[in-house]
Length: 418
Image (cartoon, rainbow, N blue to C red; front, side):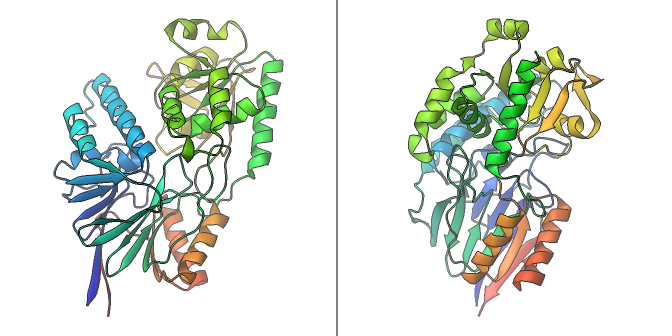
């Protein structure tokens, strides 16, 4: 009997703390939940950790795996992981009485000392397993992961098959026996990219003409650089604040991972980088500010919001998904934001633009169809709100004709073939 054991340590029925244990040896991602009171996945020892990409919900708890022998990821993800973990510790130290993290800088140093970088499509061995990182098209350096032993497993992680201004979409899926697939946007299609970009730029220009300012909260990694490239193509020079400055320099150090490094470099050079002195006078005239954090849960964006939240001429333009429990979600649903510990009403115009780096409904359905055609006969749907993961599993069973499960955290499956 040939068997593979899969245990789901996190990322089930939610977006955050992705973590999957394979055969009690390999963990695929070990993320953090950045909102709510339960930030960590289930604890587990493992021999090897494979990190799919540099977002906290996939790497933010990695330093807790102190007994891990080796950690594998791509070169950009290695740099992003260091950046995010150091910043996570810094932010945690500022929050008195809320010790969300139970690792230290020494733990991060230990993790990074075990890290080995791999290239896309290059098969490598760990014990009896063959592993391959494949371009997931999600962010710079992001990967889907194929693990092969007697039974093969494909983990999509976060994936996108659509080209964006910054990177190319994922370009195909390997044959495998088992597929673990994200379900973030199941049931929702994204606006066509060109239409979205045109509407975004039009809104910015109208706001500036009316004498208002524009605040664009962005995830530091990938989204900031995507927005910079779009603005740069239209000869718009914004202010740039927050961690996105460091992340842009990291990306420019890995030009082979992006579509057009010259466009990003030009756009970055044309942006005004913010320091404390500049921040005080930004609103002396109508301005465009690209800044962290993307869900308005911290970072410089909150300082800027204090300046414009009462100004109906100004705009707050979200560029990505707002997780439940974040300031961004509350702003979108209730028009309220927490500033200086007080809930205040946003009088500025609030807009959301779906610059998603995840596959939409159409792409997810196409992906599972192609994977089923290549031999996948069992799917697990993860990384999505509970209703979406369950609905995606039902779709796969009814329309694709394969077995599909929306697992719960702590579920363990022993999968065998004769």
